[in-house]
Image 1: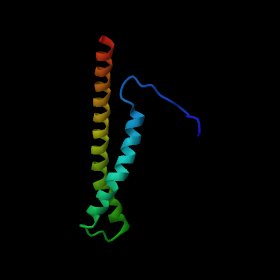
Image 2: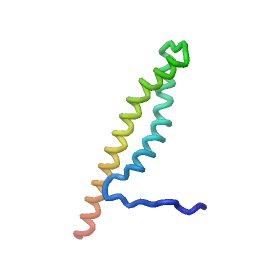
Image 3: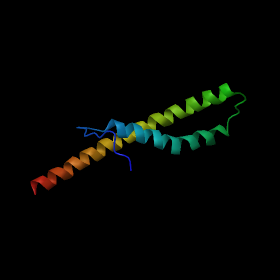
Length: 89
């Protein structure tokens, strides 16, 4: 197994994790949504296909990124609360 190249210990939300998770979730969930919606629209040229993918994919990517960030922030606050309750006991 290869050694880890870099590790981080962020004080807040780990934006590297947010970006990586956004990328993976957008491909796994977003790509099939864009492909499914493309069936309902006539796309005669590659330019039309590209334009459609950007117009539909961008909001999906944005919503995914915001959702992942809010999850990470919620999880961070939840972990801090659990750590505080453990420390005070």
